Length: 528
Image (cartoon, rainbow, N blue to C red; front, side, top):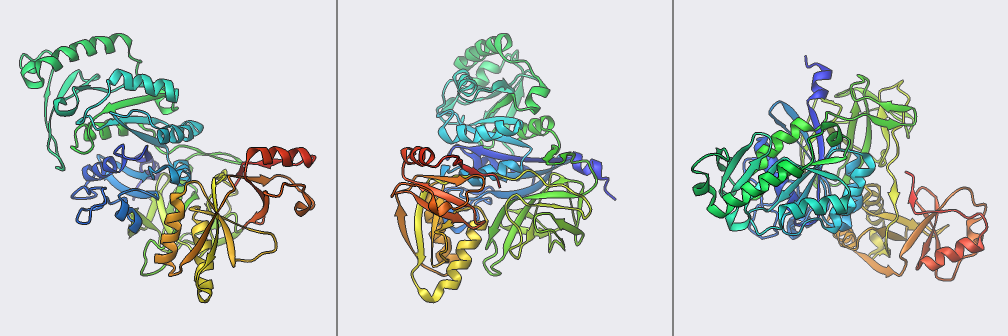
């Protein structure tokens, strides 16, 4: 019988983050390839006859070649049990990424070697810093023209405010990319391009090897000698504690497309990342090695299996062991229950499991009981994990159904997609569900929403974009929200937890409302 402490100790749960097109999904595929989870890596470009990335399972992702929802994948490698959370790179889906990062114990930040740090990288990095989780940097696409590696490290340090520690160093780039120098072993891994294969052709030599100049070229040989001297004199010292507290980022150079540097990166990453981290509750920290089961909901996805129109809730196990058919307690619902058909995920593919441990991500069928941030634990264990904040959307539209005969499908679709956190829905006080106001972080989410309503719920919608740009939750008890003094282009609405909010067209209107309503307090997020 497996030892609980050992099983938890070999878990590694991490998210992969990046700006769009930096190669995040390609790197994910190659990690799965090395773990034996897939036999052939898929292209993530939306060509009619190409394979699709395993982690991109929604129809709209396959059509457009982008990731718009987080995927969960588990595989075994070198004695470790690895849970990868592949997040959407597109900026319009940053809220899904934020929730996913709440379930991770570490993050891999993928950076395009020619572009460096980009907008989305900055946003996602801030979320990692808030949680003090270890951040590993993979500088990708060295097989293309790239910026000077010293400039890339300087940019990471200056723009993201984290120190860097180079684990390896590139030799050339683009057509002249010849491999990397490993600063710890003091060996050179020479590279020969071999796209798509499980193993990459590489030769290991030392800097003193008389054949090195012939192997990597005279110019690269001279440049490498100069770079090694600089690195030995000026680079950061290795500090495991600083790495594991998110203050020092180990940096690796490679090419996910050609597989070069991926396996050495994976091996070193697994050595340096911690096992599952402790989690905060109102009652104090919960250790993953506490043998009593606990978990929280970080993601809900409807219609992963279109044949069954199901709804899957994703749980991050925070402590102990989960056994199939065990009785658990849903804290927010204040009820005991059995979780139906617990599953491990490989994107949309699933496998029913009998057990899982702290660090694992499991999916359970959900008849509509759970919400993002809910706590599930063993009966008799009194705790509640910190809620996942809901951030303010920036784009708004009034939505109603085109066909009045399909009201039922319209209401079901809007409510389910909102419960996933993909959209936020609001309504005017005292009004029903004939029409709702939908709020999203990015405009592409409207397209995904319309696509899903049409394909998953068989209902066409009419969308009218609204001019509001800001939303604020009304804090505290306001006796009569409808009697607040607000400008003519400000709207009072409620969310579906019956909290009151105000929609504003400008920051000036926010200030105007605060000045004319003594004691009014407005928040730009809901505490969950």
